[in-house]
Amino acid sequence: MAEHVSRSSKETMQRAELHKKIWAIADNVRGAVDGWDFKQYVLGILFYRFISENLTEYFNKGEHASGNLDFEYANISDELAERDFRPDTVEDKGFFILPSQLFANVVKAAPTNENLNVDLANVFRDIEGSAVGYPSEDDIKGLFEDMDTTSNRLGGTVAEKNKRLTDILTGIASIRFADFRNNDIDAFGDAYEYLISNYASNAGKSGGEFFTPQTVSKLLARLVMDGQKEVNKVYDPTCGSGSLLLQMKKQFEEHIIDEGFFGQKINMTNFNLARMNMFLHNVNYNNFSIKRGDTLLNPQHQEEKPFDAIVSNPPYGLKWVGDADPTLINDERFSPAGVLAPKSKADYAFIMHALHYLSSQGRAAIVCFPGIFYRKGAEKKIRQYLADNNFIDCVIDLPPNLFFGTSIPTCILVLAKNKTENKVLFIDASREFKKETNNNILEESNIEQIVAAFRERTDTEYFSRYVDKAEIEANDYNLSVSTYVEKEDTRERIDIRALNREIATTVANIDRLRAAIDEIVKELSDE
Image (cartoon, rainbow, N blue to C red; front, side):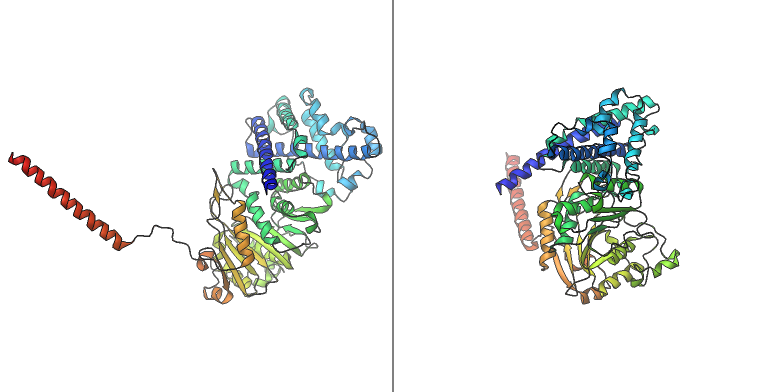
């Protein structure tokens, strides 16, 4: 226990030190550029440093193991690298970088390089180009697309652009990741996620749309994996920056997830962030598949389904084409419910998509907006389909203010296809949180409390109830937790009789005091 506490304390200290350094650099070099627009440069160059050092270490380790102890990949010529190192490397690593284009060599020359912005653009183009014709091509293609080093967002002149790029490069270079690499935290990946979360919290709603706080991600991962010894693969149909998929990796030993991580995102920036995030967490290109496209209208990974584990935080109340496209009712994902999600609210379209991709022994955990559990119309019909077919495993009320950019409370819907009882578990976890400055968070104890209730399925007053489907039907398929779990009345209870006795005593005392005062006044008047 002491060792665990000591390690946890070390991790906290190392993480705090790293966070302080990385945010100071990001904040200092931003200047007049809006942080939300600027994030891709900081995140992209952090990623560039990672893959440069990752490849360098890969070559150095191989050469040192064969007895060439003085070898340093960064110091050899591009010609030698082309001849002896490029062949077969892309097959293994998914990309290739020439020595002259490594982060360490570019940052060394940056302060005096008048063509820095163009040279960096060429480096990024060549890294992407190195994968063309290889299995990793789709995983590398367009990774640096948001890193426009010639953009006026960096400055009005080439000199201004180069100055800002140099500041970012030298700032990222100043972090001694080697100090962290042998310690207890995933330094590159942790720095990356910290930057994403900070940009999200400073950007408001737009940030929250693609970043799920780690504590919520952890809860989803625990829920889908509880009682599972292994799963075939993990899927997130709206993967954002990939944080939910990576939390699955962090929470469990790698051998439990046999075939890797799969996700889809329509937004180009988020699509690139997710792929970079995979590499940064040492998930090789052949162990993940992140696709770009509209999940509802152009679903990918149909050949990879079904998935044993699905985690998702889809956008709330997103508009979609719905029944304006009459062919969608024949889509095998949506047709079983007999009705499409409303055009103004695609929430149940994402839920039906996830259900279709879920394996017969799997589990899906989806973050939802509370309104979808009680609204009428098409949403009620889809709820009825899900309940009548016994796909709804659990509904959990979460505390408010967990997500960046919105204070609304959220819920988790857990789906399963292998339930043995026609019941639904309802958990009111709205008071399971720790209050922090800007947002509430789920502490480990809060997560443990929720997962324990999920596992045990016992009725606990004011917290959880395991409800028969007949009761849900009697409630017109309302799935709001408050319908089934009574809220504890935390108002102070007042004993009216005791209060009346106290008032009577107080009035009697006042009467006596007044009589005494009147007597004193009379005596003084008589004198």
